Amino acid sequence: MNNNKRVVILFSRLSDYMLKTLETYVATTKNEILIFKIDPDKTEAPFQFNLKNDLISFKNENDFNESELLTEIETFDPNVIICSGWWNKKYINVVKHLHKSTPCILTMDNQWHGTLKQYLGCVYGRLFLKKLFVKIWVPGNAQKEFAKKLGFLDEDILTGWYVANDKFSRQLDEDNFNKRFVFVGRYVAHKGILDLINCFKILKESTNDQWQLHCYGTGDLIDKLPIDSDIIHHGFMQPSQLVAEAKKGGVFVLPSHFEPWGLVVQEFALAGYPLIVSNKVGAAEQFVKKDNGLIFEAKENNSLLNALRAFTLKSDIELLNMSKKSQEYGKTIGTKSWTANLESLIKSFDN
Image (cartoon, rainbow, N blue to C red; front, top):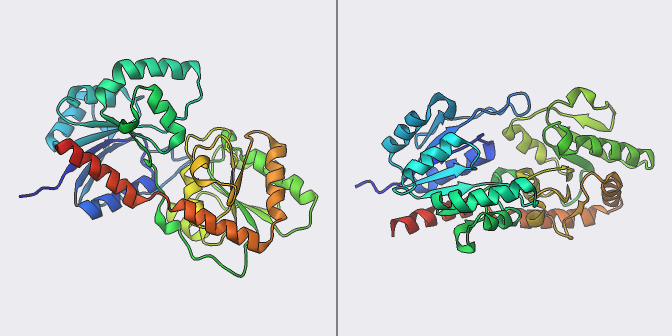
């Protein structure tokens, strides 16, 4: 008798790190997953996915109307349904049909900011969402507060929804620290890429050190960024290419004005990078401590400039010690804990 379980995931946009997590999950458990997804914006994140896996089926959400989507899921007969957010009305209506017969889990990465829209969302959550979902799975504590306001109790909230690909882990170079500031992200205003470049240029004007700024990404601002011998734009890279680049070492900088989580912070923590991130990055609380990085005030260029300057004044030994701490914090969650969470949930639903 086949005791393997079946999981449906109603995604928005599939990411490489989530795909790697799911591949590890099915390899470990032999359970089956049916994923409905929305194709990403190719202008800002032209990811290329290998969607060939005997235990994972992929379908485009926009190929189905609500009735067809419901039929597909009922035919698959899942043990659990995971729904990414509540903005997709088609997904929510399907959950309304199935939640009494199949346990449904909500996921989100929104931080609590106390806006009017969020307060209205809490009313909606308590009146409607809480009735549809038995659990909510969020990245970390930055989202847990919001989940509570939606009406979920502590015991119904899981953390660790986003986990990095452990291939970012590397052996640290004990003899040399590569003096690179590294930015990875979309070239859009709210990622703070312009802030970072302007601050780095000011920094270089006041020092003759060997530090460079290496940027990886693409987006609307690609043609507006300055060309400089110490500012190197590598363009967008597929995740496998980025893993190889991360092996070179350096200090990772994420100056976002708004960043619900920022999984890239964990990726570069695993790679042994000391971290400089803004206080608007959700992942900062979990992966950035006093002994491995700095958290600065978003949009405050003096704060960012001072953080960059502080790292240029550190010795290689100090930077190496910070690298080791980053790796320690980066390993606090991973695909094993993610798999254990989902398996524990499925077993609890069977009881």
